Image (cartoon, rainbow, N blue to C red; front, side, top):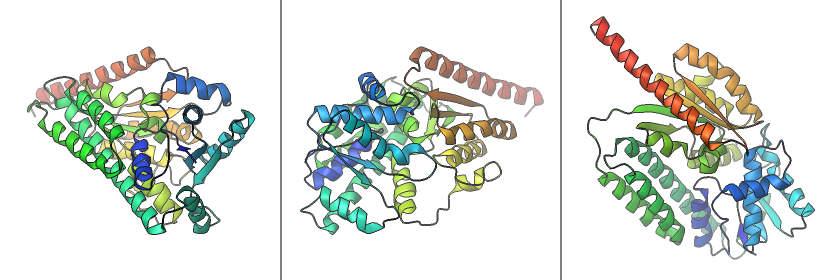
Length: 368
């Protein structure tokens, strides 16, 4: 058995750490690229969302490298993510690909079915060993998420432009070469290097929160590297969703049906009182929270045809008006052009800078 899996940002580092620790034979698909998207789009329905298309491309590229088993997480609720595994299974069968898809989820069949799937993936390992492997993998992605957030802070303040990008690119290369727990050395080294980057002590960057559907929010191919783009414009960004938070909230707490008490739920309540699938509540709630924290703007990113985010998007104009915070919406699909995308981001950044300058002038004129 040779296992492959889909990309989503740095989630491959979690899976790589887990599989290294548990001696699983695996193949990491190539980094998501234009070819990945073209390959997936060729065999998926036209109106399917872009995450499903890229995942299909990941699987086909993994199969090209010898994979015969695919691992994917499951989901429930109105979001189509819960149907991905079955759609991929049927499409791959139609293409004559002899692969098995193992869906890791806690469903109505209870924990017994999940344990059976884990034993299939790790047949010679005890449950305690498997649990330790998952813990190490989760720890790796949690620290990687923190490292990324630190880079969002350093990038707009750096004196030598491109220093943060170079460190993060080097980390990506070293993390791919790391085996098992060696990933933690690579993370620490990158963090130490970021802490040594010389910064402008007088820099007061704009702050922009990024909200939306988790895949387009996290996967660089689908957001066209928006965090480095904004960071290199001198803007500090904060991503509302991370892989580690998603795992904790939607897989661990969701699977165990634990009560979720989150700030964003309370913040979203005046506008959207219930979870409607996907990350609609998070999008609305985090936009409110960013406004309350004094952020200068918010960018919403989601895939074309994503129902939960379409609902959230219809609510955001009211939130923007109530809290006087500008919101830019970017809708992504396989034909989204980089030039138009970049033009919209540039215009949004210019507007935010002018807005801050106007506020300063108003304060001067008022004598405050």
